[in-house]
Length: 345
Image (tube, rainbow, N blue to C red; front, top):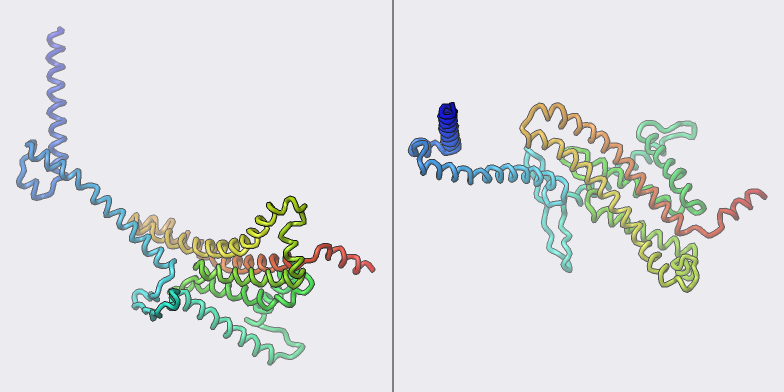
C-alpha cells in the first residue's frame, strides 16, 4: 500500500514538472520576437536566454508609456506657461518678434503680453461704447444692455467695495480700484476663449498688480499719518522694550500682503486650466471612449463653467483686498468713534 502511494506521488510530481516546463517554454515563445520563434527551438537553453532578453526589454515599453504621459504634461505646461508663439492648431502658429535684452532684461513680446494688450484694447472699446451711450441718454432714460451691466458693476465696486472698506476719502482711490477690477476680469475671461491665454496665470503680471497696490497703500498711509505716524505704526503701539520684535514683524507684514495678493490670483487662474486640460488628457492616456464620455467631457464642462465664476470672483477678491489694505493703512485711530459722535449731535 505504501509502495503504491510512493509510485502515485512520483507520477504526480513528474506530471507537475512536465506541466511547469511546458508553461515556461510557452511563456518564452510568447515573449520572444517572431524571428526568435522561427529560429530557436522550445525548451533549449538558447530559448531560455531569449526569454530573459525579452523580459529585460519590457521596461522599454513602460518607458514609452511614461514618455507618452510626459508629452501630455508638456502640452499642458505649454498651454499654461508663457512663450513667444501664438498657436492656432490646426491652422498654424505665429512666432512673436524677439527683442534684444536691455541691461540684461528680456523685454521680448510674449503671448501673455499680447493678451494684456488685447484686454486693454477691449477695456477701451467697451467703456468708449458705454460712454457714448451715456452721452446720448436723457435724464429720464435708463441705461440698457452693456451700459446697464457696466453701471451695475461700477456701482457695486464703488459702494460695496471702495466706500465700505476705505470710508472717508474713498473717491481718491475709486479710479484705481475700478481699473484693476475690470482689467483682471477681462484678462481672466480672455483665458476662456479658444486660442487665447490667461495673462493673470503669469506670476509676473499678478506680482506687478500687487506691487501697484502696495505702493498706493504706502502712499495712503504716509498721507494719512505722516512720516512720524507711519514709523510709529511699525512699532505696533507696544512698549519700546518690544520694538526689537515688533518692528521686524510689522516690516515683514508690509510685504506679505502684496505677495498674498499675487499668489492667490496666480494660483487660482493657473489651477483651473491645468484641471481642465488634465481631465481632457485622461481619456487620451487611457485610450478609452467610456472615460471620455463619462468623466472627461462632463467634468471638463463643469470646471469650465466654474472657471467663468472664478474669473469674476478673483477680480472681486483682488479689488476688495486692495481696498481693505488701503483702508487699514489710511485709517485714523478712533475715527469711527469720532464719526459716530458727530452723527449723534
